Length: 236
Length: 243
Image 1 (cartoon, helix red, strand yellow):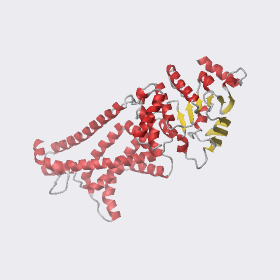
Image 2 (image 1 turned 180 degrees about the vertical axis):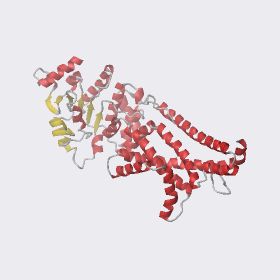
Image 3 (image 1 turned 180 degrees about the horizontal axis):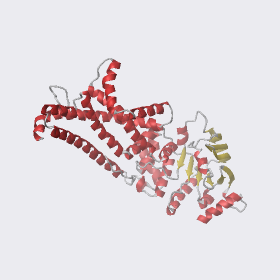
Image 4 (image 1 turned 45 degrees about the vertical axis):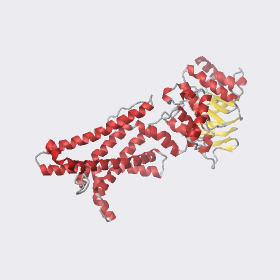
């Protein structure tokens, strides 16, 4: 195992960069981070639309969530990678395609988690904000979302680790992220799949575990400022 | 100041307010009482449009509050509203709860709003709890903070929905004391409560509701006299049994 790491560590970390494309762990981190950063605000908007007044916006949001939930992520990736370029007439970068697919997919799931946080708050919170004369935007962004998001942190962490793991699907459309690089190493070495995929599993574990630990720490920090609230231990 | 004209309201098929006609004069305190489910909370919640009405008219200082050109948020910021369950925002400290309307509605800076909020907290006797979180103070203190928050925009009307019903008995006194002071200061107050001692002492008018109908509207002396409506007498004897 050590000799594999010794031989391929640079490839694992940054792919063929600077002689070729950036890849490996760096690419996995970039895809995960960008997906995460873009997904979060999209999910908040979907959650607001789903929990808001019935109307055209809510119907669109409902349709979006129900459609995305009913199809596999892999199919979404195939669509974005093979079908969209045919429709628009020019090829799209594979990594970009992957990020778009993950964002669309995770927006539906993360949106549902945040929506659950919003509907789970006592009705009195919204009434109190209304009685003070606060409009919709300050009510949601100052009163409801800060509490709702805090209450569903464990669910959010689950989705964030899922994003990291889903970035491995990029290997199917030749995004040179960590799994893709390890597949290449495996075809070079042929006889050492146990070691190679062992390393791959360990790296994903470290990434996801570190993320859930970091969020646990953040959650404890926030809840120590909000003593008396129920502290929900992250299960992710 | 506040006038209810033929106000009726339904929750689906259930009529919860029936043709209510009544007036609250400026600077007076009106106590609403009646058995549970009588519509008293619903009635006061119509004053700031937390509950819409289906029939009738409510005017505040002569303005029809359901008129199309009324901005509901402006209307609400002119009416302090206090809930039975306090409804403080648990993620904000006591002073931040009180400051919030100044920051978000009056668009003041924190530097402008903080001293005003501190002054209000002093008035309700909680300046020393300014930086505590709602979870760290008692029920009575929470309700005083909620009252401070509802008064921070200097509303002309203060509406209270059973402000002491969720409190432990030993904390009721501190809230009622504050309400007595506010009433004496001349704010127009509507308060749903079962505290009959408070009603007798502070109210200018007492309204009694039963099944959504305002069956009795009188001064406290008439309300507590033996000549009061038999519904009122039955209610009072039931309340006394529990106290």
